[in-house]
Image 1: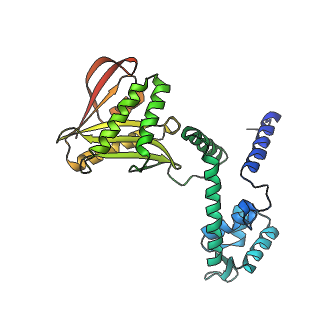
Image 2: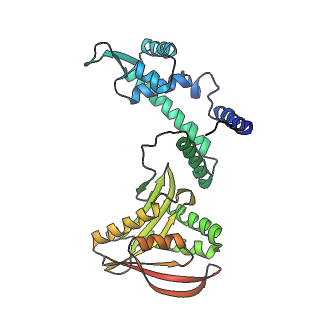
Image 3: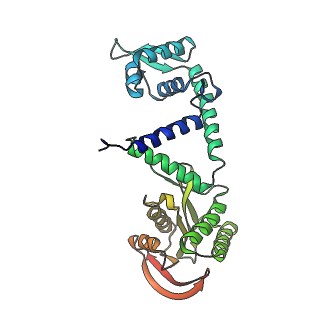
Length: 308
C-alpha cells in the first residue's frame, strides 16, 4: 500500500510537479497576468460556483488555513468582489456571494485561462491532445477525484468534422491493419457523396466527442426506400472501452426505426473483430462473406443485416 515507495518514484512525482507548475505559470506572483494569485483565483471561483457557501465550508473544501482564507475574503469584500449576507436558517452563519463586479472579474480570468490552455494544446496533434487528456484523467481517477460529467457526448457534425473522419480512418487503419491509401480514398468518396447528396429526412451522421476532441463517428445513409446502410463506424483507440461504438450503432437503429426503414445493412471485413462484436450485440446477423484483395491486403468481406 505504498509504505515502501521507492525514492525514484517520489522524485518522479516531484519532477512532474516542478515541470507542471512552471508550465501553467503558477510560479508567477499573479495568475495569467491578472490581479489574483492562484489561490485567490480559486477562492473566487469556488464562491461563484457554490450558492451561499460559508467561509468554514470553503476552507474545508480547499483545505486552506482559516486565517489565510479570512484575509483573502476580507480583501475581496473591500474590492467589491464578494458580499456577506446572514443565513435565513442560522443567524450565526454569514453566507458568501459573488457580486456583479466579482463575476465580471471572474469572466475575464476565465477567458484568459481558456486562451492559455488553448495555446498549450494548439501545437499538439489531435492524437497527442487525446493522450494528454487521457493521462490527466488517469491522474484524477487514481488520486480519487470525482468525475460527475459523462465521459463523452454524441452530437451532429460541425464544420471540419468530415475532414477529421477521412483523416482518422486513413491514419488508424494504416497503423492497426496496414491498409494503404486506397482505403482513405474510399472513405473520402463516401464522405463527399454524403455531403453532396445529403437527405436530411433519411440520413444522419453522429460524432462522439470527449473533452472537446472527436473520438468517434458513424453514418446512416439511404440505400433504398426501406433499407438504410450503416457506414464508417470508428472509435479512437484512446476512447475505446467506454461503450461509444455501441452507442453510435444504437443511434443508427433508433433513427432508422423513426424514419421507417425496415432493415439496416452494412459491409465490413472479418479482421475488424471489435466492430463485429458490436454488430452482433446489437442484433445484426452475418448474411454473406466473400474474399477480396483491397487496400493492399487479402481480406474477407462480410455483409451484415439488422431487421427492424
